[in-house]
Length: 86
Image (cartoon, rainbow, N blue to C red):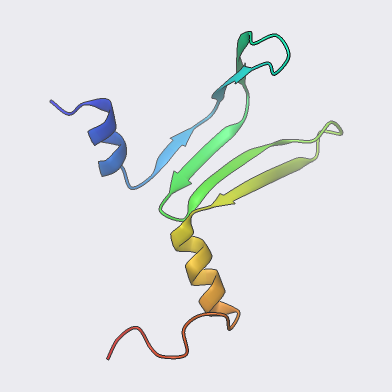
């Protein structure tokens, strides 16, 4: 039976229809936990959070992984000057 860490490593894609956010207030030190109706998608390229603005307009936030940033860097001409494959 796999533990939680092994399951995360072996998952190619993780999806959820809501997320739980836990924060610790800077001034009081109290920890607060909230369940939010935010769609979550994670893969090798990073994490995407889908939700709505205050005006009920669909929106998303993308948090890119180091792998995805390296790919983008190469696509916009900031990658290595030599091919990766010989």
